[in-house]
Image (tube, rainbow, N blue to C red; front, side, top):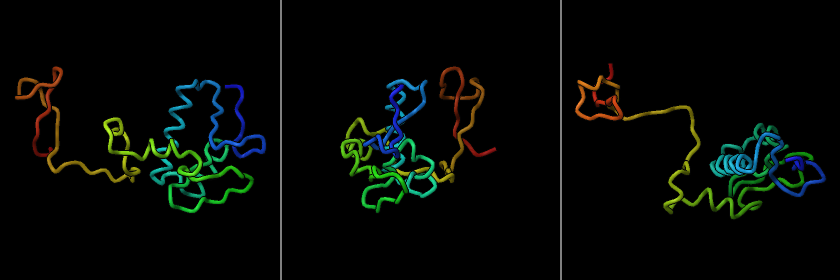
Length: 140
């Protein structure tokens, strides 16, 4: 806080900065993890996203892809090249602590199971969940 520097500016040698004065250290870490996960999954790998994030995040290129050019931003890097430990943290999916990590970007097409779950009154259900119940059944 108070010492924010534009990562695209000449005075900064980093690739991430967050300028929201209301954002404490935990918030800054959450923002960085958001950007890292999004970048590792390819969600920040467009010219439009690179331009939009240029004053905050310069590692939008996923591993193995060419770094998108961004004029006036000499610090632009891939996530794997700019922050290898962070890249490993958000791409490692074998340990217990990595279950929260997504493996793909949402595409807006959400599909659930063939059967639909619907809320039913507690007196009609065989399985209770906190005063209400969920019963597997046909849509309707």
